[in-house]
Image (tube, rainbow, N blue to C red):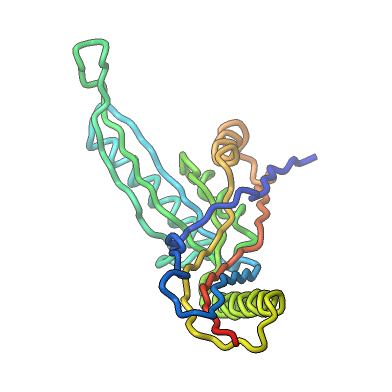
Length: 242
């Protein structure tokens, strides 16, 4: 019976545009209420980005580069044949460095070439398939798979509205607690935004390559799951009361 490699993208990281919330309640007129509001919208990701590398070594630098280029081109061609657009394959790092024996007078032992690149796809449910294609084609490292929302602005707008309503609710609660009659908006400050994304962990990245080193059978597909994306908005608001 064919076995399946399985990994759950359970690690949550954050790409944050946040700044520290200031003490915005200072120097305000009398009879004001200062509150904060937060809104969060969860949405299923629509984009997967796979980070890959091809690493080669040789005693001759030119041969190490030649072999690296050959493997890289093979990986790209097979990915494009599977439906990945050429524009969605982006180089991120290319480096050639000298390998030395530091215990033997720093003698040069060879040259190592690292070629890293990302593969973007909206076919997120088949991200594992593209990992399999890349690794079986010669990619030596899977550096991670992240899931995101390609156009988060519309969801951020919804989160911002929630943040404003949350601030309003807090102000209303305070108004009732202090026995005020009415409240009116004095100022509103959009404070921060955050877009989270889900990504595979390091155990998966190592296992994906190791599995192919032992068994390159195409009957062992990698399956990947992902978490919803959380898009967060925060506001500071000041209300005058009477």
